[in-house]
Image (tube, rainbow, N blue to C red):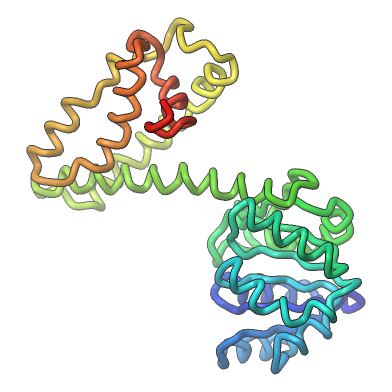
Length: 292
């Protein structure tokens, strides 16, 4: 049992409930609170204690876990309790921007709280399972002291004292995920008029896209080296997506997903870099079009 560490979880959506359940299962004395009623029943049945108010929950825990809707929700819940938080530890796993994470870290310091920020790279059912990871930044002391607790949830990776780094990594990884998902759905829409189901397309797309992730290392080497002319790259001119756009229009579907990539390519070609490698579109991404 880890009952010597009193933990309170604020927010019992699907993710908050999964985190709290893992703590209870791991033997931690866990108090739970949720703004709307009815979310605590299952956790109480597992051994958690329900708090009537957020204040009751905070007073019950030396470690306070915030897993709320957004940054504004965290401040809305905790601002009225600032005078009662000194000496406690706040671990915030609410999705926030890097600047919001840094702002919350500064607020926590003023309130006398130790602060650790977390970015969850998992869906709720993955908590406590292999393959889940949570990225942390902020207090190194908090990370080391409570790592056994954190490791109940997922693999724990620490990125340094800058409280915004975990959020930055989290959102950057999500950017790659969502653009990939959009590309898959674009492909599924393209073949649908030919009578191909999304399931059939997924069976083809999964091994293909998985294999293509092997190109990340090569792109990274080129970007880090800063030389887009090294041999072996597919040129921007060869990468032109005109045929893909024509085929998309021919299927009667939106070109928006592919348009985005084509614009990035064309900006570099028009700047005179057509013979250089595809990785150069990162230079278009780094600067908004109005600044290029």
